[in-house]
Amino acid sequence: MQRPLAHLVLEDGTVFTGRSVGAPGAASGEACFTTAMAGYEEALTDPSYVAQVLCFSYPLIGNYGIDPARAESERIQCEGVVVRRARPAFAAWLREQGVVAVEDVDTRALVRRIRDGGVLRCALGEAPVDELYERALAEPPIDGRPLDRAVGTTEPYGCGSGPRVTVLDLGCKRSIPERLTACGLEALVVPGAWDADAILDTDPRVVLVANGPGDPAVLTDQIETLRELLGRVPLYGICLGHQLLGLALGLRTFKLPFGHRGANHPVRELASGRVLVTAQNHGFAVEPGDGAEVSHVSLNDGTVEGFAGEDFASVQFHPEAAPGPLDALPFFDWIAASCRSAPTFARS
Image (cartoon, rainbow, N blue to C red):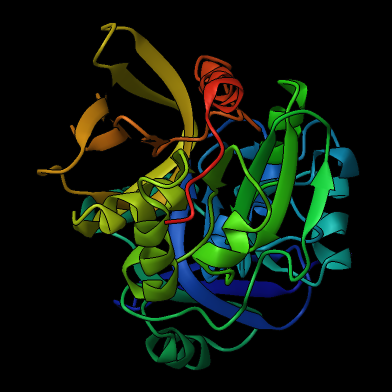
């Protein structure tokens, strides 16, 4: 059966024509790409991809089927998917999830367009090109606005046993609390809207601010919460949590031209000189400045990839490695050691 024609239309008027391989209809978001060759289930279910249309640079997606155990959340989170070729099980999963997707796209040309010119708003689907173009122009940019779709838990939940890490969930991947429990810790995941007093009422040894979508600078309540927690309990951050911790320390964030998304990004750990191959998924970064010592830097573009202080540490990359190489897993050992040595928090 011949699949219907579909298009991907960028805000600059560029049109890529292919075939519909997902759900019918149309979708819009910010076009971005990942260079990972595997881990498509984890990528698509990562809440950090809310409001984005994800292009896979690897040409054949779905090679090893679909395993629900690999999902990082309860659903596919991105707004749409663009691939060169999709295996049948992968295409069926997209349809079941109601996700608009386009196949037979020249993804190499699309990746080059984004890499050279930066991320662009876009729309995709079976609708006419003119309609998709108008939809792309109507899509608000991610930077500077709160996202329309909320992610993260609305009720606290726990897993594991041992010293407690309270995880502030702004779109936390499931594998992050799983890594904490594998280190012999209890992970108590709480809603991202909780304030400092509510977080401290959970009696944490450590607070971890996890990943999530969007522009960190608009999350003013969470930034103030971290300011109130600084010096009262050890703080750790991953991805969005790293950015929010930087803002709480008085630093600034900025939008990257096309982001870091993939499973092969080299990062230098400054203390040891060791190079880590890391998994990454972010569109914003933190400017270096007074108030936080840089602990890691990207070897691709020199941007900050980590901070370390007396009672805080954060990384821009994803140490949980789901998917990705395992070089950065010792970050969780660092959290575990901090948990076992940390005194109880101070209320005043």
